[in-house]
Image (cartoon, rainbow, N blue to C red; front, side):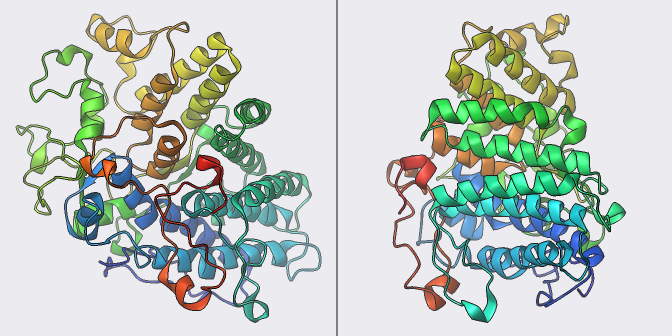
Length: 486
């Protein structure tokens, strides 16, 4: 390992040329060097580049206002095609999964740093995270035959259903490994939990909760039961969140969402998202008293001029605005060089619990989980005076709109508030939720012509492994979405 590298992949058509690329992954490296690199890769490579950025415009957190993302938002010029995902795919398989598999083999019994079970357990949790995002976006992908080197350069594509089964088994293994005595532990090399096995176990259970809920369309009752079975062992508060906190103010260490906004500015805040916060589609808000109190934390005025208005960009029809003069951007409170990047959070789990309990008919339990989720997000984003227990008269209209009571709670309420909480960093999960539930209601007029329900397989696979690449169209859902396996 040549040293810790941020920026292991970048925009496929318009590279963030200021960011270094990772050297070829090592054939071997000590666990203490692998650990920080896989931590960076999981955050930057999955949640902080094209996979998240395309998801963001599709789910209308943002609108594309420049270059390939403007074209993709307008469904123009075949802009979302095999070239759009090549960098991410290659990074996942050639770097991230290779390094994680190396950690697992090196730290397991018989490995070069045998019985370093803390490292092994952490690597298995991160591998499950990386693979879950990959299959959620692409559907069938290589798993059982992936990363075999020269022994198999053309791996077959596993079904998503079988991958989900394997990932749950991998997380079960991780939980066991994290309980074992460990010859070596990562300490500060672990950028998430400083080597804390108990927190990594909670993260493993939290990921099991997320994966179970993704199956709500395939097995509503079974997925709810699996969610509720894993919840007691998952995150107990926001202090347990799986978040990346190590971005720096140096050019190659900055938060990638900040790099994108600062250097390229491909995105503006979507009108859809802004109007959900305003609770109106009208140009002039007749009742600002029920506006979401998180607006100032989430969205800046146009040009970041304090006296300017906040203006959303309409998906599919926005005018090019790389110069930031027409539409609002995500607030600097949220997106800045050293901003924390959440990957899996306590509030997400409580929203999932609310959804699962609603499916079982437990409205009281569902509402309690929903209130906790909303309160948690409000308190972290400038809305502490608007939580459910607030007595502030100024928050009454907002509270009446959001805290609807157990009898009135709907799936739309849950997913809408979850969608707000996901802005801007967890757009992939917002995209997953939309494909599962149809919420929130999207407004891009191009959706009536075509909506991508999966990501295209990369050109690199079409060039080297074409016989195994599924031929499904990106307008077709993945297995947990439409029930078919390509």
